[in-house]
Length: 150
Image: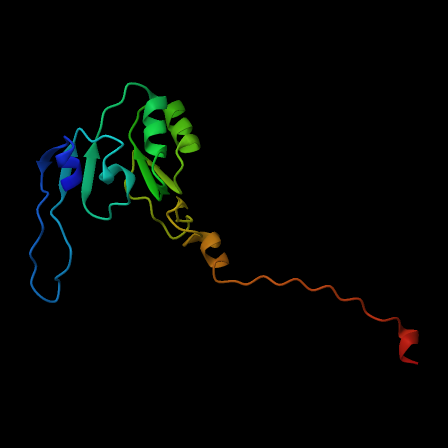
């Protein structure tokens, strides 16, 4: 957040560290909203695991997709649209393991969840998540003919 603000983003709310008492101490921040965020800012290029929402403007759908895909990470992307064709294009073109369209609750036991690119390998949940705990083995066996045992 500090990097974004130093490069021109505007803090609309939050942004302060929460001082919690034991046993909940740690690195927590208030829910934060940053406006005017650009792709070169760390908050847009790294996986920010916290209650931080960024706002940025774009002129075309292609520009929005290109900017979103510049990050080396690809866990989750969200988009809001009334255009079903656009929704399908976004799901297809955004390089993220999960894409939420008009929805922020994107984890469900029956859906595979996991990232692309540097956001990790493999999936959890769904039948694909079970596969992560299995080790596949192949075996080829030719039984000898009966005469060989005489």
